Length: 139
Image (cartoon, rainbow, N blue to C red; front, side, top):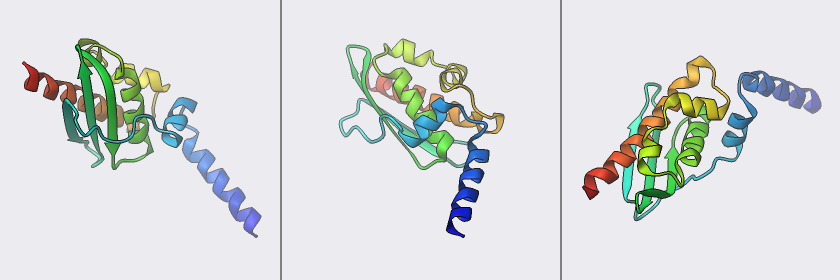
């Protein structure tokens, strides 16, 4: 009986994940840049339309994002979006990071189901707000 139960669970998990790319699955299972930066130069906290929230911390040196971390209380898609946006922004000049759009993030992730695309928008907006926070403090 246990084997049938485990088989059923695997089948359900397969159906749930069938609309997600391998990139998204990898970022859900092994998210990058999770945590906080205690002496961050910029910080933002935003809540999305679904109730998920993302926090992003940035450390900037000579106009380049030297370190970046995120935290979320959200679903797997929000975790993947936070992970990927931090990977895209790390090492970029501030202007380059501000030019990352939700579409760029979605393309990097291999797409998302339409009803999950708001997670990419939330992650992108939070990154932009963290950079703007840094700019307000330093200009």
